[in-house]
Length: 361
Image (cartoon, rainbow, N blue to C red; front, side):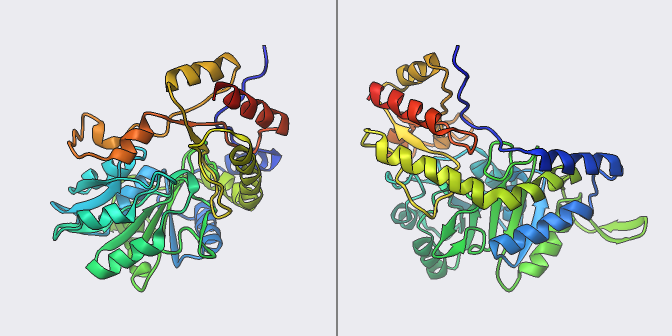
């Protein structure tokens, strides 16, 4: 049987193994205070992104939770896309708010600024766009909306490590930008995430989030400390940070390989509905849309090729049960399929995937 072609696969070498062994032998594996490798990763990722401050956390969901905690979201509304992983909306609930679902641009599957404009109300406190698949959303238009209505931009950049918008890295625009370093992401860790912060209040917000990521602990002096507010157990461990530091040195080259694969998919797949090629995109995902998705997935599986569905629409899930109509989201969510996308793919494997997709088409 032919070797399985994975949907996602971390790109790992001996450098990551050496980094993990170094932490293991040090005996210093974690610190809620965020010292050691965690602090080093924060500084390097902050410099890479070009943000004002960076706070490392244990996953992307925690990043979203913490970022929204900077606002008074209780009984207020945050506009989000339904075409996303459920954490995007759940983070609003964690903070006592209400997610309001917007439709997507059918060309990119990113949130549509034109639909956002229809949803602004007195209760709107923030807009939370997702850079879907690593494709930058229409940030300039969203920033204009935020400025006009005096609401806050917090970005979900879980897919977008290394993506750019107008010659600046994603992570350097919004008040708070949330990253995921899940093992399948472009920058992979066993578990990890980050919030980058921008603006005149970024330093004070960084201090706030450092407390909140570690159970509210503050004013630590030697073994003594105080707790001044509620917090959570969201800090990053040293193993993840050590791997992340190595991964960060490879991120641009790994993303370059992803772009090469995406360019081939875009140029050679004969389907009309597929992810466009954009050099600003980091291509965490590459999606196509097909008729009879179960049959297509079965067709690919028969040839030992993994595929995925990103995503089931959040507003249709039982927890949310929203009756809002989002035609582009609902149409795409019934047809969208993610193809294998990671730096370990060989050219012959990419060719095989393209041929099988075109045979089905």
